[in-house]
Length: 68
Image 1 (cartoon, helix red, strand yellow):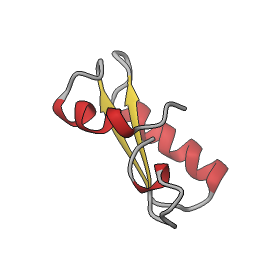
Image 2 (cartoon, one colour):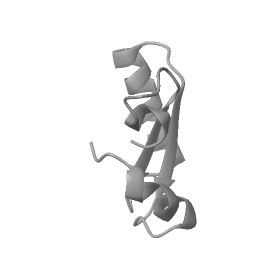
Image 3 (cartoon, helix red, strand yellow):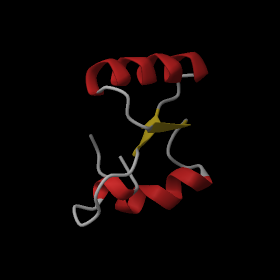
Image 4 (tube, one colour):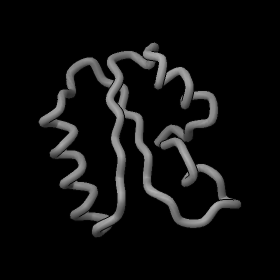
């Protein structure tokens, strides 16, 4: 998890998740979103996929991310 939800001093905001997997694709991302909405209700959830955590975006958020 990364973004505003990792900072207890900030309130609200969407849930930003980085999923690192060499096997998950877009359909899996949609299934994960559906499952999360089923468990958490209708909240704004963003999921970014990365194969191994070495992509530019992943490297930019990993230093402050919380591993779930």
